[in-house]
Length: 90
Image (tube, rainbow, N blue to C red; front, top):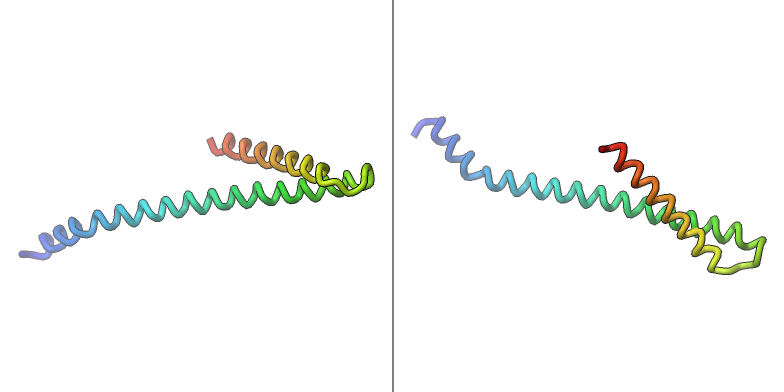
């Protein structure tokens, strides 16, 4: 067996492992991107909740309904930002 045949055998044996490794890397990259999106959504929800409480407190005292309305606004803003990013990415 010469060197070229040995390399061909090794490549044939390792190729499935390389494909599996690439698939795992792609899966981890997708999960990482999804985690970034989820954290962005959570940040907008928390900021919206805080803004709702801050605006609602002088109007009608402390009421969690103001915070929930602000959180819904944060969800809407986050969804709008995500939609525009997907649209730009094409």
